[in-house]
Amino acid sequence: MADERSSRTQLPRPVSRWLVWASWAAVGTFLGAALFTFDYAGGTAYLHDDPTACLNCHIMREQYQGWQLGPHRRVTTCNDCHTGQSIAAHYGSKAVNGFNHSWAFTTGWFSEPLQINAFNRGIAEANCRRCHGAFVQVVDGPAPHSEPGACLRCHADMGH
Amino acid sequence: MTRSDQPTRRAHRWRIALLVSSLVGTTLVLALALDIARKKAEGRLPPMPALELAGKVDDPAAWGTSFPLHYEGYLETVDQERTRFGGSDALPRPPTAADPRSTVSQSKLEADPRLTRMWAGYAFAIDHREDRGHAYMLDDQTFSARHQKRQPGACLQCHASIVTPNRMLGAGAPDPSSAGAAKLNAMPSAEARTHVDRAISCVDCHDPATMRLRITRPSFIAAIARLEAGRGTPDYDVNTMATRAQMRTFVCAQCHAEYYLEGDDTQLTHPWDDGLRADDMLARYDATGFRDWAHAETGAAMLKAQHPEFELWSEGIHARAGVSCVDCHMPYERAGAMKITNHHIQSPLLDAGRACQACHPIAAEELVARAESIQERTLAMQDTAIDRLIDLIEAVKVARSIDPEDPRLEAARQAQRRASFLIDFVSSENSAGFHAPQEAARLLFLALDEILVGTRALERRS
Image (cartoon, rainbow over all chains, first blue to last red; front, side, top):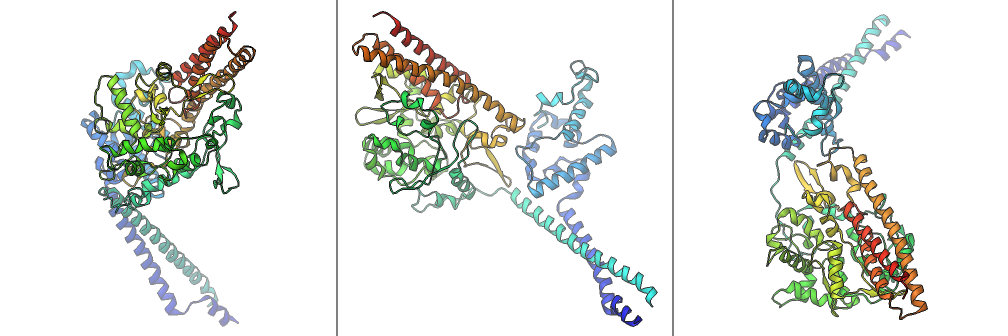
């Protein structure tokens, strides 16, 4: 009785050893493929501040070219306007947008012409005010009267 | 033995789960890597494909082998989708030997029977339907019940792919295209129909050697030259002197424009010598004494306006801002890293995101709502104007029945002719006022003024 039960639950020794090897090999393959893909996609570039990283996706060509020809090229990079400014906000916004953009571009589930969403509009607005805040204080008015989104309503094509 | 079974079994399960999830994960990661490779390949812009037509210049499928994306869009003009105020659902009908169409668009005459009185005695009072896609242009002309009255071959200048037929008919002449068009215009429609075999195709707008836009209708080339001469540019040649942006309007304008048939040989002509406004054209028609037909109820010398999209657009804000027909009706779309012009030509309201948002970055629903508010108001004004026009027709008819020689009739008939043309100019234009809202309102206002003048003339004691 006992022998019958154990034969059901215990794999023969060679199979058991094969399973150990196979599972670790599979994990290794996965990690290798993931690392390769990360490197192939230029993944490390996204941790830095170079605007050509955004150009990894050809869809950003127009914005990049617009920025190169515009006045903001002298004083800003993409990250100055499009990411948060504390370390947490900076990498947080990169992570959120990195995932969203990868998802959208891979699946093709996005509408064109591209439009900024509320989260990123907020970040961009805050960055307008970070540099120009003192200058626009008079027209902007003190909180809570200042209107979020007011800069980009008229100056939408300022950066690119 | 049995006691140590449990951890072993758990370890096996754990390893199998690890194995399976790693394999699934690897598959997904490799799929992602392949997709990234595909996107990177897209990013390298392909060179302009060469066009090998091998004598098949009229066959869109031959162009399609080099420009498959443009060709696919072109084929999609078979779609029938309506907007709130324009276009038509596909209405099924039983095909007959005389008319093999299995679908047609909504009859405008059934939707608004007043139009049959407005056009009484003219072929448009027999059959007039909502517009539908380019794919149907030849069939809808060929099988229209308007052929119960004699129709000239001139209609085919814009209801068929006409470049090669014109050139073949005019072979040997110094300008084969114009000479051929003149011959075709003068033919009865049934004879002309044997010279054409397909609806609009690539060659009607594109030069097969360079793919550049070009104007192929001799009527437009001549009319725009006369218009430009009046504006101070003698010897204007649209194909060498127009900018690319202008060509993105003119290729459409060569057909989507008001015209009349001049002389006994029914030559297709655009009345633009004095300008593009409806009242400029009306003044020209009045000066030359042209009439399309005699009104069956009143005897007035009538004018029919037809699809003056180019002229009305010319008076609007989008024209002033340099926005062409193609910008909204064939908006750019992304194909990999390339931008291509969408060749599925349709109402911008059916794709408001692409059509409008390049300039107006607001929600598509709001953009459509704005356009519809313009259309709704224009159609309300137009509706009132048609009511008053019918009143005038009725009044002239009564006065005529009492005394056909009544001297007051002349002024009333003149008012009917002018008012009818102005209303028709707005109602037969395909944007329900959107192309130039204030201009459409101005024309309807002028029409009401004409009706008032005509009504007063009849009220005067003779």
